[in-house]
Length: 212
Image (cartoon, rainbow, N blue to C red; front, side, top):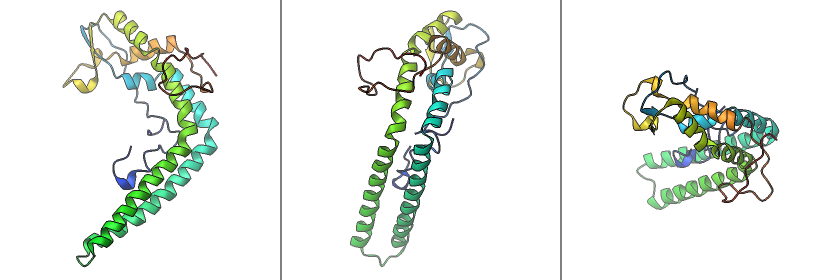
Protein backbone atom coordinates (compact mmCIF):
# COMPACT_ATOMS: atom_id res chain seq x y z
CA UNK A 1 0.00 0.00 0.00
CA UNK A 2 1.12 3.47 -0.70
CA UNK A 3 1.23 6.56 1.49
CA UNK A 4 -2.01 7.86 2.82
CA UNK A 5 -4.72 10.42 2.13
CA UNK A 6 -1.88 15.38 5.03
CA UNK A 7 -1.42 18.90 4.68
CA UNK A 8 1.65 20.32 6.48
CA UNK A 9 1.71 23.82 4.97
CA UNK A 10 -0.16 25.96 2.46
CA UNK A 11 2.07 24.87 -0.38
CA UNK A 12 1.50 21.27 0.62
CA UNK A 13 -2.25 21.68 0.73
CA UNK A 14 -2.60 19.68 -2.48
CA UNK A 15 -0.21 16.98 -1.33
CA UNK A 16 -2.63 15.45 1.12
CA UNK A 17 -3.62 12.93 -1.55
CA UNK A 18 -1.54 9.74 -1.84
CA UNK A 19 0.94 9.04 -4.54
CA UNK A 20 -1.13 6.08 -5.71
CA UNK A 21 -4.30 4.24 -4.83
CA UNK A 22 -5.12 6.70 -2.03
CA UNK A 23 -4.72 3.77 0.30
CA UNK A 24 -3.43 4.11 3.80
CA UNK A 25 -0.01 2.57 4.39
CA UNK A 26 -0.29 -0.82 6.00
CA UNK A 27 2.35 -1.24 8.70
CA UNK A 28 3.80 -4.74 8.88
CA UNK A 29 1.78 -6.75 11.34
CA UNK A 30 3.84 -7.93 14.33
CA UNK A 31 4.15 -11.58 15.15
CA UNK A 32 1.34 -13.06 17.26
CA UNK A 33 1.75 -12.69 21.00
CA UNK A 34 3.88 -15.44 22.44
CA UNK A 35 2.53 -15.41 25.95
CA UNK A 36 -0.52 -14.33 27.89
CA UNK A 37 -0.40 -11.11 29.87
CA UNK A 38 -2.85 -9.05 31.91
CA UNK A 39 -1.99 -6.01 29.80
CA UNK A 40 -1.73 -6.13 26.01
CA UNK A 41 -0.80 -3.67 23.27
CA UNK A 42 -2.83 -3.28 20.09
CA UNK A 43 -2.42 -1.01 17.08
CA UNK A 44 -6.02 -0.77 15.90
CA UNK A 45 -5.23 1.09 12.67
CA UNK A 46 -2.61 -1.49 11.72
CA UNK A 47 -5.08 -4.27 12.48
CA UNK A 48 -7.59 -2.81 10.04
CA UNK A 49 -5.13 -2.05 7.25
CA UNK A 50 -3.35 -5.40 7.56
CA UNK A 51 -6.56 -7.41 7.38
CA UNK A 52 -6.99 -9.58 4.31
CA UNK A 53 -10.27 -7.87 3.42
CA UNK A 54 -8.69 -4.40 3.46
CA UNK A 55 -5.62 -5.43 1.47
CA UNK A 56 -7.66 -7.17 -1.21
CA UNK A 57 -10.21 -4.38 -1.46
CA UNK A 58 -7.57 -1.65 -1.79
CA UNK A 59 -5.85 -3.60 -4.57
CA UNK A 60 -9.19 -3.97 -6.34
CA UNK A 61 -9.95 -0.25 -6.00
CA UNK A 62 -6.50 0.65 -7.30
CA UNK A 63 -7.18 -1.44 -10.40
CA UNK A 64 -10.77 -0.32 -10.92
CA UNK A 65 -9.96 3.38 -10.58
CA UNK A 66 -6.54 3.33 -12.21
CA UNK A 67 -7.43 5.96 -14.83
CA UNK A 68 -8.90 8.34 -12.24
CA UNK A 69 -5.94 7.89 -9.92
CA UNK A 70 -3.49 8.65 -12.73
CA UNK A 71 -5.46 11.77 -13.68
CA UNK A 72 -5.46 12.98 -10.07
CA UNK A 73 -1.74 12.39 -9.73
CA UNK A 74 -1.09 14.36 -12.91
CA UNK A 75 -3.26 17.26 -11.77
CA UNK A 76 -1.72 17.18 -8.30
CA UNK A 77 1.77 17.44 -9.76
CA UNK A 78 0.75 20.43 -11.89
CA UNK A 79 -0.90 22.24 -8.98
CA UNK A 80 2.09 21.62 -6.72
CA UNK A 81 4.36 23.08 -9.39
CA UNK A 82 2.16 26.19 -9.72
CA UNK A 83 2.12 26.71 -5.97
CA UNK A 84 5.87 26.18 -5.85
CA UNK A 85 6.43 29.05 -8.27
CA UNK A 86 4.11 31.30 -6.28
CA UNK A 87 5.82 30.39 -3.01
CA UNK A 88 9.26 31.15 -4.43
CA UNK A 89 8.00 34.53 -5.63
CA UNK A 90 6.74 35.35 -2.12
CA UNK A 91 10.01 34.26 -0.53
CA UNK A 92 11.97 36.53 -2.87
CA UNK A 93 9.66 39.45 -2.07
CA UNK A 94 10.13 38.81 1.65
CA UNK A 95 13.91 38.95 1.24
CA UNK A 96 13.71 42.31 -0.48
CA UNK A 97 13.36 45.10 2.13
CA UNK A 98 12.02 47.42 -0.59
CA UNK A 99 8.94 45.27 -1.19
CA UNK A 100 5.80 47.25 -0.25
CA UNK A 101 3.77 45.55 2.46
CA UNK A 102 0.62 45.85 0.39
CA UNK A 103 2.28 44.01 -2.49
CA UNK A 104 3.49 41.19 -0.24
CA UNK A 105 0.12 40.89 1.50
CA UNK A 106 -1.64 40.64 -1.87
CA UNK A 107 0.71 37.90 -3.06
CA UNK A 108 0.26 35.93 0.16
CA UNK A 109 -3.53 36.24 -0.04
CA UNK A 110 -3.50 35.06 -3.65
CA UNK A 111 -1.26 32.15 -2.72
CA UNK A 112 -3.58 31.09 0.08
CA UNK A 113 -6.64 31.33 -2.16
CA UNK A 114 -4.93 29.28 -4.86
CA UNK A 115 -3.90 26.62 -2.36
CA UNK A 116 -7.45 26.34 -1.03
CA UNK A 117 -8.86 26.12 -4.55
CA UNK A 118 -6.33 23.43 -5.46
CA UNK A 119 -7.23 21.40 -2.39
CA UNK A 120 -10.94 21.67 -3.16
CA UNK A 121 -10.34 20.62 -6.77
CA UNK A 122 -8.36 17.55 -5.78
CA UNK A 123 -10.96 16.60 -3.19
CA UNK A 124 -13.62 16.68 -5.89
CA UNK A 125 -11.50 14.56 -8.21
CA UNK A 126 -10.71 12.07 -5.44
CA UNK A 127 -14.27 11.68 -4.17
CA UNK A 128 -15.13 8.74 -6.49
CA UNK A 129 -12.11 6.84 -5.16
CA UNK A 130 -12.48 7.84 -1.52
CA UNK A 131 -16.10 6.68 -1.39
CA UNK A 132 -15.45 2.93 -1.95
CA UNK A 133 -12.40 3.16 0.30
CA UNK A 134 -14.51 4.55 3.12
CA UNK A 135 -17.12 1.85 2.53
CA UNK A 136 -14.52 -0.89 2.79
CA UNK A 137 -13.11 0.58 6.00
CA UNK A 138 -16.57 0.91 7.55
CA UNK A 139 -17.35 -2.76 6.88
CA UNK A 140 -14.12 -3.90 8.52
CA UNK A 141 -14.41 -1.55 11.47
CA UNK A 142 -17.91 -2.89 12.11
CA UNK A 143 -16.25 -6.22 12.97
CA UNK A 144 -13.33 -4.69 14.85
CA UNK A 145 -14.86 -4.71 18.33
CA UNK A 146 -15.77 -8.38 18.13
CA UNK A 147 -12.36 -9.24 16.69
CA UNK A 148 -10.65 -7.44 19.56
CA UNK A 149 -12.85 -9.18 22.13
CA UNK A 150 -12.05 -12.55 20.61
CA UNK A 151 -8.32 -11.85 20.69
CA UNK A 152 -8.50 -10.57 24.27
CA UNK A 153 -10.37 -13.67 25.37
CA UNK A 154 -7.98 -15.99 23.59
CA UNK A 155 -4.92 -14.28 25.12
CA UNK A 156 -6.52 -13.93 28.55
CA UNK A 157 -5.75 -10.23 28.89
CA UNK A 158 -7.79 -7.72 30.86
CA UNK A 159 -6.45 -4.36 29.62
CA UNK A 160 -5.50 -3.27 26.12
CA UNK A 161 -3.69 0.01 25.33
CA UNK A 162 -2.41 1.64 22.17
CA UNK A 163 1.36 1.53 21.46
CA UNK A 164 1.67 5.32 21.73
CA UNK A 165 0.32 5.16 25.30
CA UNK A 166 3.31 3.12 26.44
CA UNK A 167 6.92 3.97 27.22
CA UNK A 168 8.23 0.44 26.76
CA UNK A 169 6.67 -2.95 26.22
CA UNK A 170 7.70 -6.47 25.39
CA UNK A 171 6.78 -7.38 21.79
CA UNK A 172 5.12 -10.54 23.12
CA UNK A 173 2.44 -8.30 24.65
CA UNK A 174 1.37 -7.03 21.22
CA UNK A 175 -1.90 -8.67 20.12
CA UNK A 176 -2.31 -6.67 16.89
CA UNK A 177 -1.64 -9.74 14.75
CA UNK A 178 -4.14 -11.71 16.82
CA UNK A 179 -6.80 -9.09 16.07
CA UNK A 180 -5.91 -9.30 12.38
CA UNK A 181 -6.43 -13.07 12.53
CA UNK A 182 -9.82 -12.58 14.13
CA UNK A 183 -10.79 -9.95 11.54
CA UNK A 184 -9.82 -12.31 8.74
CA UNK A 185 -12.16 -14.91 10.19
CA UNK A 186 -15.05 -12.49 10.78
CA UNK A 187 -14.81 -10.64 7.46
CA UNK A 188 -12.65 -12.47 4.89
CA UNK A 189 -13.62 -10.01 2.14
CA UNK A 190 -15.34 -6.65 1.80
CA UNK A 191 -17.49 -5.11 -0.90
CA UNK A 192 -15.99 -2.20 -2.85
CA UNK A 193 -19.38 -1.09 -4.20
CA UNK A 194 -21.30 1.16 -1.79
CA UNK A 195 -25.11 1.18 -2.03
CA UNK A 196 -26.46 4.16 -3.97
CA UNK A 197 -27.73 5.90 -0.83
CA UNK A 198 -24.76 5.06 1.41
CA UNK A 199 -22.89 7.86 3.14
CA UNK A 200 -19.67 7.44 5.21
CA UNK A 201 -20.46 7.18 8.90
CA UNK A 202 -24.23 7.12 8.38
CA UNK A 203 -26.16 5.48 11.19
CA UNK A 204 -28.41 2.50 10.67
CA UNK A 205 -26.56 1.10 7.69
CA UNK A 206 -27.19 -2.58 7.14
CA UNK A 207 -24.28 -4.94 7.45
CA UNK A 208 -22.37 -5.01 4.19
CA UNK A 209 -22.28 -8.26 2.22
CA UNK A 210 -18.93 -9.98 1.87
CA UNK A 211 -17.27 -9.94 -1.50
CA UNK A 212 -17.99 -7.67 -4.45
